[in-house]
Image (cartoon, rainbow, N blue to C red):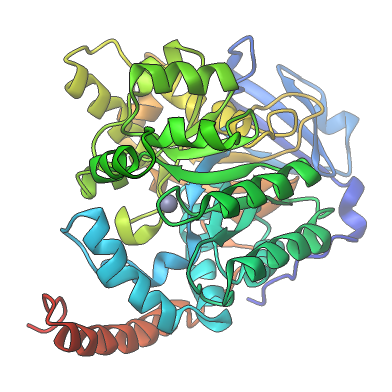
Length: 465
Ligand SMILES: [Zn+2]
């Protein structure tokens, strides 16, 4: 079957889509949940949601999805990713962050990250995210124009940014060039209905003070979010104290960049004073529990951050350190991890976790007026889960079911901006043909070069048995 191509000027802009007879979890401020409800979508907007008997008579031209035996909820929001890194899935595992990043990931990125491989990795990531119910993601990487093209064509929603860093990065030989690219991206994609361009500095330890401040100034100029990895490891924390006299968060405060437009990824090593500072400045945190566990970076103080009023969403981080983009797995892990680490089973209760993955994530990205809940007037970004499965019954508490029982693979159909982008697990606009074979071809080249680099640098040889 031939795939459709995504067309913004599609005459179906005013088309009506109805989902009837479905369990609907709205994630609105009233926590509305219906066991049998109807959602009416016109164009890209939710027109109504709730109990409705005569939807089909009222909209005779509508496309109707029978939601019997299905659960409809807002699409999940991934607040921290590096999507093209899918091509490094499993390339370097079981080592600490600093060694992983500087001795394995940066060297191989410098040789293999180009426009073609970014497009490949992004397509693989879009397929994985749609299949597991993510409708919006916040990304920091290189060759962002290519990422934006794939997002545009596949129907996803995204916040995208070029990663600013002090050394030559793929596609961006100098930090100044990175800033120029960032501004060009904002101008080129700024008015896209599903793409927001933001600005990102990689981290306080990999960016000069000037680069961080210039990046923040650019973000402020265009009123877009500013991302940075913050206080991810103990090593970063200790080095920050030694080099600057400040904690990583205190250092950013000294640079004047902490405010409500800042999204700090990780926030693992925060002092009580740092947490108060982030709360006072309105900073958001992208919590990446699986990446932090895998790299043994530590556990972010999420219950305290939430208690202090810091906005926290979930991220997967890049696939090379997770090693997947499944947010259902992430929310399950987060709920379990924080209970274990705090010796308190009441923290990060199921409803809080589902909020963080939907409306909370949308708030972190500054998109909560548009997405994150199913309410009239909001963009129609939703996922439909198959409930005709043993692990989906009985339903005592819908939030508990989602966090502790359901899986990304239960997602059957995905609607973004009013368009069905995946139906019964078949993509509308994304061609899987040849995608996985091509990923293996590129991986074979990367593996071969990895072995050469390991020999050259006298490092642990990861891929030669
Ligand atoms: Zn990251």
